[in-house]
Structures are given as structure tokens and as C-alpha cells.
Length: 180
Ligand SMILES: [Fe+2]
Ligand SMILES: [Fe+2]
Image (cartoon, rainbow, N blue to C red; front, side):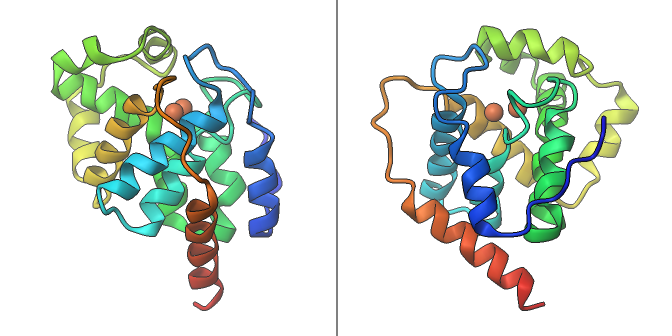
């Protein structure tokens, strides 16, 4: 996988995200709607801005590079602008599916057919060593909550939320980084 040129501004991130409207990866909603729904679920749970923004952008690589590379590739796009935690959560969202399917076997049955198919391409179930390493990461619980919202954010019946609050969250995360 060639690392992408990182996006330098909130406008550039928003433009890349906007092009995913109408882009399909075979799920019941387009990739843009899927990410907005995932972000909305986490915002409603009272998650912090970095979690909401990671949810909003977690599939930025989807439809652009291979399934196996889409998480890392999307993370590399936003790491300088949005920081390590957002990038790690994006990079890990396929790994966290492997993790949750391994530690909660019944969870696999709740995945969409597309998500069940891609699990195999993403490495299938984790080994005990992989489970231990994942669980030991300080952001592992965040990644699991993002994962659960990811699977719930594919509902064609749900009215589309206003994306403006998510752009505002994106702006706050970038501004907080710029102020470091
Ligand atoms: Fe994904
Ligand atoms: Fe997703």
C-alpha cells in the first residue's frame, strides 16, 4: 500500500468525505450515509469529539483502495491534521471487528452479510496473542464502541441527520491539534 498524501485542512477532509455520497460498498446505505449514521450514534451516546470524528471518517479509504488496506490508508490521510487517537481508531476499525468477533462469538451473527464476508479478508478471528495485544491497548475500549456503532450505522430507514454538527466537531479536533 502506498501511503497517501495527508490532507492538510478541514476543508480538504470534508471534500474527500463528501465525494463518498452515493459511493457503495454493497451495504444498504452509501458510504457517506454509513459514516454519518455511525458518528450520530456515538454523538448520541455522549462520546467525545475525537470518537465522533473517527466514526465520521472511519471508511474514508473505502471505495478508494482495497478492503484490506482501507483502514490504514484512511488513517494516514488524516493523522497529521487530526492526531494519533483519531488515526488509530480509524486504522483499527477492521481489527476491532476481528477482536469483538473473537471475544463475543455471537456478535458475528449480528454482522451484515458484507461485513461477514470482509472479516475473512481482514484476517478472520484473532489468535489468543492478538486478543491479548489488542485488549492491552489504552484505546481498545474506544475501538470496541466505535465498532459497535459501525455495524449499527447501516440503516436505510433512518432519517439522515444534519451533518453540520459533525463538521463542527471536525473543526474542533483540528483546532485543538493546531493549538498544541
Ligand atoms: Fe471499514
Ligand atoms: Fe464502516
